[in-house]
Image (cartoon, rainbow over all chains, first blue to last red; front, side, top):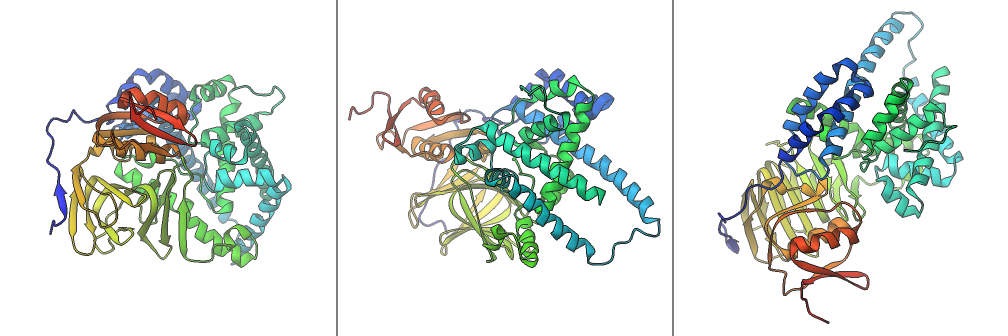
Length: 185
Length: 327
């Protein structure tokens, strides 16, 4: 079964495991105050200590890969934690509001209407982006739809990182205005 | 960060949301300072993120998926994160495609009518593919994978390197084909690299079976195999499970690897042409290399770690002995 296979001998003189989360935990402890301050102003308020504890548990159960920049990794984890939390609060509020709205008589969309509206809105959003110019449109698609890194897109287009940021900002502003318009309809 | 003084709070918040959405973002203290400066900033920032999610949903494409820590937390969270990530992954592309074709617009998806999908990354770019069953494929730079939307658990690695984090299903094995050979998972996390005919497989968790047609080779966690060319002798070796897939975080970790391997990894991760002088290709290296930053700076920094010189020759780089051939 193992024809044409050479099994190399196990080496017992290897040094201990490289990487792991040891460094991450060390950084967590060393930078506790910075992380706590971020959590507090980022929306956790008085619950920042509890969330820091959640964060610790996430870090502790993270895959045992070496991390290039442990501090950035921890901040990113904290940001994700707060986004999850904020989203679940918002959706709870929306569910409650929708429940009140649904108990009124006049709020039932005709069947099939939802898909039509979504397609019409998508077309309008595409027009909005196109109106901002070909470059803004392309930058938005590469970064936000393809998930390409902003530095990569800057290199692809031969423009500065700050131009990419400004293009994305223009697109975000225009789409937010479009959303407000839809909400008002 | 410097803000133009006339910039409104919502605009500033959008700019922060855009910066944070980039996987390379690192100015967390700057973000904290900005939040602290005005109690209205937090609400504006949350609104910017919510608008961003709304537009991403509208376009049917994902928030860019980073190899972010929260994507792999405790098991029950992981399940939820991956499921919610599903619609935002490549499959949203398929859904958007049918939607757009129906609507008679959106030429950019309509050009891909086939169910066969290629996902590729540029040199130095990384990307995560979420599969409906909760499995994940993380692509390193200069990598291309191909699959049929109808059978997403059968992936072909055309070239490059990917880490597979597989949700095992006895009824539907997850397979990765590399030319005529196949890897079949037995519940696992494994890394596969394919370049210039050479194949390297390393298993971090669980086990995979390597199937060539004649031989079945089972690889357990901490084991790997290499093949210099299709049909060449298959060499089994010990690998360091902790180092597998570490390229995701900008670190290459080795336990007794040869410099030829290190050179191939550097070329792929930095997106450049790098040859290793055959005279030193069999030398061994154990340790970690940080590979974030400018390629020329990285190469300069790691020379002493590897005990070699890396010299620029035209458009290519060459790794030679410190007192290498004066050619």
